Image 1 (cartoon, one colour):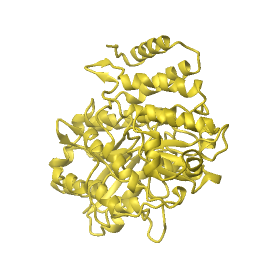
Image 2 (cartoon, one colour):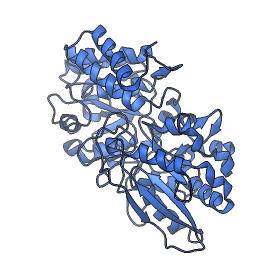
Image 3 (cartoon, helix red, strand yellow):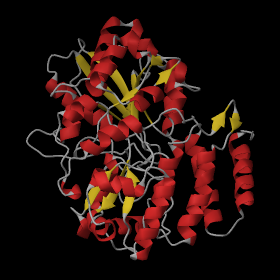
Image 4 (tube, helix red, strand yellow):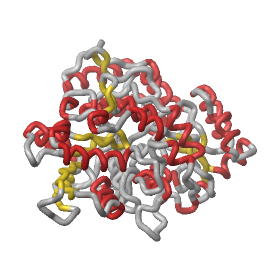
Length: 469
């Protein structure tokens, strides 16, 4: 994931500053690529060589928006001493939209300095896998990375769907971002009589009707069910049947439109503290320091280990995770290879080996095993994370202190299976920002529902040139 320097990161792609944490970074220096990039690390591009130069080595140009994947190259070269490769890495943050234009120019320019491997996060990955820039990407099959390898690794289907075009896989992630409902154990015991995840999932779901019934019970005891409406937006957004653009027109899926009503319901009934995600009041609610104690948050494993971990303070160990009212995912980083690498057999082999090690290798020396178990640095217990391969998580230890020792993989393996990757568009980052602004205005009573919808459609047209249905 991305950023976190205590500054937030936006709504559609969370970017934690490279010095802080992130749901997608190397074990202790995560640079979050799973949430939203409203704010983030600096726009300065940095280029470094991560292996000793040698005329005999294959040079791989690696582009990313954080240092997360570049840091993986160090582990790769450490565990593959015979690999005839060196990595030349270029890191350009997504702040102010700097990464995509630079990447697009480099891909279009081609030549020896073009990216051989490049990263894209959930907020804009479809542009590179299925959209305007998808023709630059190699099919994984052309690298020798077959559908059978994907099946054998138990890769979450939503990740495959996002990374595919016309049935051809061209991108995969290493981190899985299927979401759960993360709740306070002590509040669960007081209100529902138990903190058992198997029971709590039936109290808060399935479905939003059950969720708001739970909100009533919590309100009667003086608790908010969530911190703010942003906490329910991601489950709603990523469980919708269709995305924002259908046949070239702006489409408002009924499930997404219902977010207007749910947001206002949270506000009018006092079911939340009215916070905005990635702001100080939201963090305060994680530690029980808000206006009312908050029962839970929606999110993937990265929200637990790269966000809440440094915010919970007095509530550490008083949390658990269970299945949410509806399946969803939030964030993630996908790895793509330039189709031009297939023209050079040595480079193709080198690129394929690294991409395989990051995205498909299920061995105890593959990136995902190190990532899941927090062992990127030998002799150090780093941050554990949910990974794309269910095979890896099934054999890994997902117990974390924040959850009172609960094995989080027991919740996140099914969460990854229940997520859908078929409702994204390449415009999500921009449209989500516009949508969230209009919903907040309506929930606060500053606009009528009809005015919020009208202004949303007009702003999308003005900013993106997309007409409504």
